[in-house]
Image 1: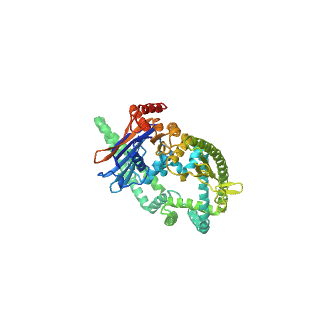
Image 2: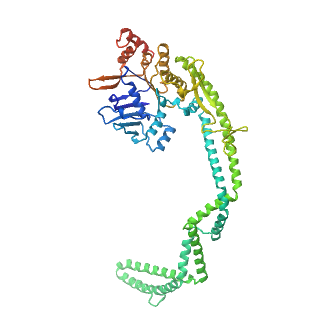
Image 3: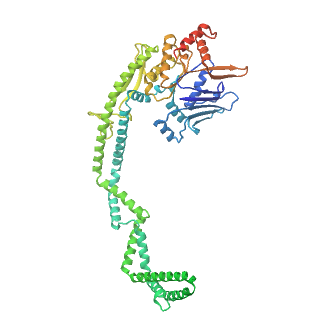
Length: 572
């Protein structure tokens, strides 16, 4: 719902703040007081074109800001994610227009292009009075409205899931066929590369191990001489380190007998003696294992040479060679089994197409049943709203392809022998048609004339579709044009009922409608001799009675007018 509206320096408005409530919010006021200015300001938040002419005289810029309490859902989430806008609760939309004609939009303080504001506006506000903001006049919404009303979203979701799967399969088939010639041309090259890599058969980490072994073999003589000398120095010679440590340890034993403080150092010497012994044993074992193997040396050099050649050709590292082998292996396998892959994909496509076709046919049938129910209910509602001869028709067009463009290679839907164009939500083109005069053929709803009649048509449709509509805020302007008496009461009751499902803001001149308000606001224009200014204020109960009485009896409020106002307001 719209919680708060702030307008500053816009047209005749200096600065106003309006807190709106749930239910039916009514705005009344004298002709020319500025009610249409409010609608224009809200229109800016819905992505309408901005003009510097709307900036109040002597001001630098106009600002319109609205705060919404909106329940987040999948479509809104996707819009915010796609445009990198943080979700905030409440949702704040702001539009600024400078005197130079520059326009800036913000959603939750994030700069947003007007086209994004327009998309968001269509998701949260339905403004009746100007065609471009009326959701029911946008043909692409008709199928969803029909499906929501009929409780068909489960079937639609099932259809969409398989539709997406089938789309992916068709894409794979197209890509596979596009690759056929390339694969055939590359087949010999791929086979050569696979054989070349497999002949060498490089292993992960192998190169490091080979280089270590090569270094050891290339320096075998040095390793042999040095380890032998070290062994003799530490253990084997007459004055070896080991022998010297044994003598030192014995003397420390003797000294420890005299002074116990030598015991710690005697232990240290014993530890050094053991360490030298371990080093000597390691050197002796290592020395005995050293090989002088020219043949092994040549093998290592040849192996490293093979790996180096592969690295130059296939990516610079053993890991990349192995990755390349996996890639070309798959490509070669595909080339060698191309027809089998095509046949497998076609079988998957046929299975998915059969499933999708069955669901599409069932969905189309359910839609036709739902369409009849909606048509009857809307005609009944229109009659109550003073349009007694209306005809409402949900036209569902489902036609097989006659152009020959669809065939087994690209058709999503096949019923019997015929192929059908398929859309993301089914095989039906759905559009609402209406006639409001006896004897006239129904015409597309989008071409219905503007004014009070279309507002009543929208009200009738909203009343029928109320429970399934997601739009939280409905704004009705001009809904009372050409309406009075009994019809005005019917319009008021319909608005009141609808306000149980949606927040409604309605501008009216009719007491029958104003008397049913949950919240009543008056739009007033004041003049100080130099400037005119529009203000909006919420009315208390006593003021509401007087305002409804003014609508009944004119500027001079009579006792009869007051009594009539109270009587009307009892219906609340």
